Image (cartoon, rainbow, N blue to C red; front, top):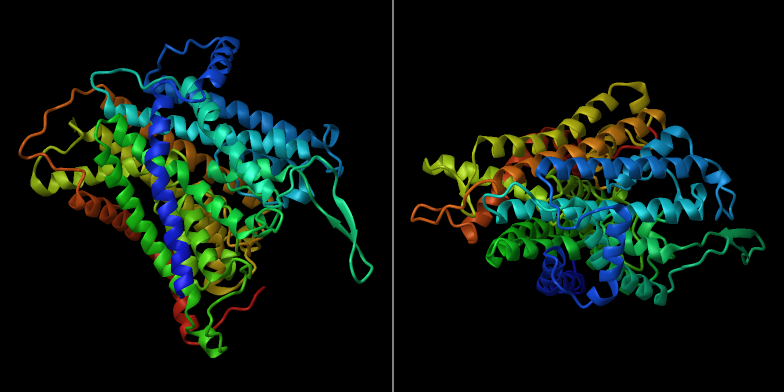
Length: 571
């Protein structure tokens, strides 16, 4: 570990924190229907879209209506994307003449992008046409992110309102998230990325002659526009197979920093939106503090594990740390930081191969996802995921003092706790259930490239990434098979919608309740004690649920590596 590395990490943290209040204030005005600097330009367009769709922007929905609209909207997006992938050979903007995507891969990919997971069992530049990349994937990058933001805002209203039957309009919230937040920010980010040398073209691949006289095909395309939304919307799906490690997808140190900031920007600022909408910004800062503590711990462990020489690395004399699978232009610090950021958020973009991390270095990204990706998390998903843990934490606090649990003046009762627990339990069911299945059936065992605990970690990571809607992979697993495409897609669907629907039910229940005045016995939820309780609940639930699986994978691999034992590829 070096001073330069810590300075990079500190600079990143400072930039994200500096964006929280201004971006939070702007988004609060957007979702409250207030006037913004973009209203003169985008306001007429917004109203025109409502008229075209036959939507009354003043008509709000109950939680059930909101959830139904959300499911129907995403179902329509799935059908559209699946059709584009299956028909891309007959559609325009296909200069490299890509064939139709196979049915199981198209099902997996359509599910992946609709659920904001962006798991990719294919190489983008060798599988998809420009039309599929732009109209199919980039479009879903916008609307899946907007859908997550809309649900988060609806959940915030559930905590903020009293004696109300409605949570807002899904159609209005999704439209405003896209028009006023995602689209303008993506335009700015894409322009900066183009200035750094990132391609943005509809021209076909470039043919070049190497110094040895060989012919080389260099893939290009509309890259910058997709990278901007893949990062800002915490989607993560790369235009190129190597994702953010590809020099065209991440050409400079500035582009690397900008992409990392974009991953956290909206998720962190939504905590401020929460504080503003419930009338107490301290509540938002408390949630962000809990997220920040978990994030800082992950960065510390990962950076230490990758920069230190221990076990096999020490035996090989690699005192400088583990550079395998990392870009020299980014180094260990930026690679470790990126890995923690992308798995703390449900992004999944990578600038290094997680499969090549040390055992403990790979454990942290895995654990980040298993905790529910509530450490800032995906746009919207991180906030409402953490609020689920807030409900459980408040319930635990109430049990400890023998008092009916309350949060922001609302009683937390059996219905809210049951829905919160349902949202939490569906993730380990997918992660651990499918991992267990894949380790005993031949179709599952054919996937990992490594033997022993590392091979087990590759399978566990794949299903964890899918259910957590992350999309990153250890990279050593062959997932483009009928078995993996199907089971991973099921995990993505459950991980997305079996969390969204219960959390909307919680919000609907809370919105209907009256707000009680604070009393001497009210547990303050804006101070250090609450932050510690919330962090403890997240870690205890994650530890109790996933420690046995982690012990079979990265923990065993670390202990074996300390004893000098390695596991050969392809064993």
